[in-house]
Image 1 (cartoon, rainbow, N blue to C red):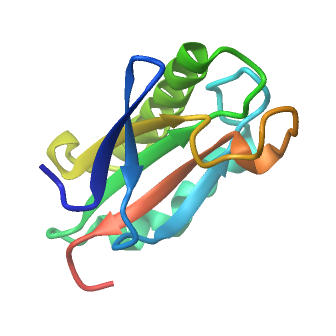
Image 2: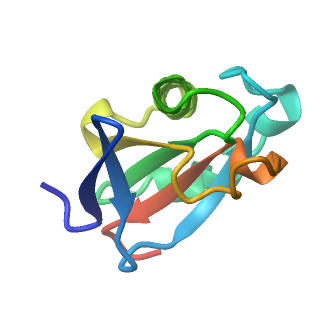
Length: 131
């Protein structure tokens, strides 16, 4: 189990939160209620290309959602967003065994009733290796 994650329970669902030991290297933004990346967001993957070629590099992908829906729906949406970014990385040749996924749902986003594009995101954390 990774030391970068801690597990908590909210509304009966398991939620994984990052500990302060990890810091985001890159992020991808999404439209409301969508797990599809725009072309410009997909192009951000190129920023990670040199780092992902390092053999000891591992990646943690954490999906988020804003608070516009139900908790469990947002958790599912954040998972689908994380999977979308994982697929992009695998197309670059990153082995699935080097990628860890987590869904945070609306945890760690803006307060209920407030909306922010940055709440609808996936953060990419680089774990291990020399960056």
